[in-house]
Image (cartoon, rainbow over all chains, first blue to last red; front, side):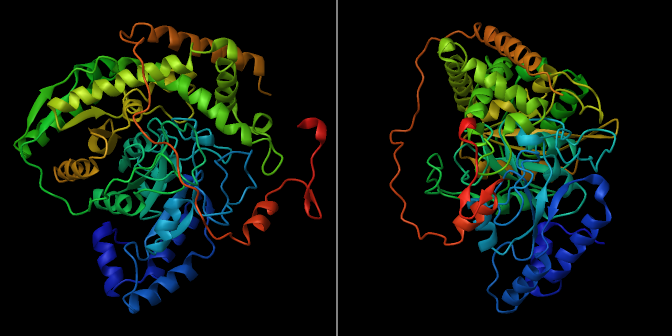
Length: 456
Length: 75
């Protein structure tokens, strides 16, 4: 099967050279013929019928911008009549009763939801191994973990089982698996995309974003799902630009932080990122500037107390009365740790000690980035401090949390961030992370495209 | 079988270590707050989905006729 890039494929579908039905049937063959990857928890039985309807719309020239593309959805985003399990026994038998805002928009543009994909249970993991439905395998490097928590989204894209996937990113859950699986992933600015219909991990940080094999696919998807929603009070009424209409980057200021270098456990990772930044600077007549991010080494310690408390609060609805099972009686160890930990540190006797203190440092980290962006246009950083762990490796919780050290800062600061391919080390894909100021997604995509064009 | 007490102690230990680390942040005593001036949203008028109740009811673990079944003491 010939692998087409998204722009090329859309043109073929819309011109009638390749039908939406053929597109979906090709993916279904691949999904059903390769269950070992374990990317999908559920495959849409009506996908072919829906593709036939899109083909009719194409003939009438009434098809939307995603006409006939296969979209895989993380299992914590509500899709009507599909299982929304959060990859947990708790919601094993729960079916979506409405479409999340992002799903409504995708359907309006004639994208076809091909299925619900695997993930770390309740988005609480970095390896993709904590799913009740079994671990996801990394198609780009099967002996290493695919990363998490959007493990199935990244694996489905990397294995060529869908055109674009949706993931959610609270502390790196799109960017980490995108890096490990050698694909592209984007965490939009906080408030850029409506979270209505997303089962929350931490309301202060959650964002839905796209994963794809090319920057164009991510840009197109964000154009569609971004925007204000009456159902999400933190979604901003900022204009959604045409991100997929890439502008050539010239003479920008690229920030590199020695603070990130210090946090990188495997120096080969930082060296690779630095060399990519240098190539980008040379190709775009840009300058690299050193920036200081004073509090970035406290990102992990700031993030987790907030996540523990907000996750504990958010899971109180999962009491097994109206739907599902009681979460404490049916979840895995990491989910339980967050619930029990969140309950413990949010007790009245600890008022101001944990959550509020962490919120104060969050504010300092945000200011750190605000100051840095006065001197640079974008910041380049690694995605993970070392290569992904091997499948089945035992990692203690603190080691696991430390894997998010380079991705968490974007969530704390509310800025946008994207991951592109940086290259390989020992045959393992390594991603390069780009930070741009909040709501500067157009700049982010233009830089991502420039990186993609370096052909690393 | 997950040992809940072990998990609780482990979570508390991790949180205590994390919070202790935050003490080194200068300026932590500064005030913080939301930048948003208005956090109120207008009431949304939307047509009700007649199927919503039925779909939601189908997700219920225990039901009888038109009611959810649950033990009062577990509330």
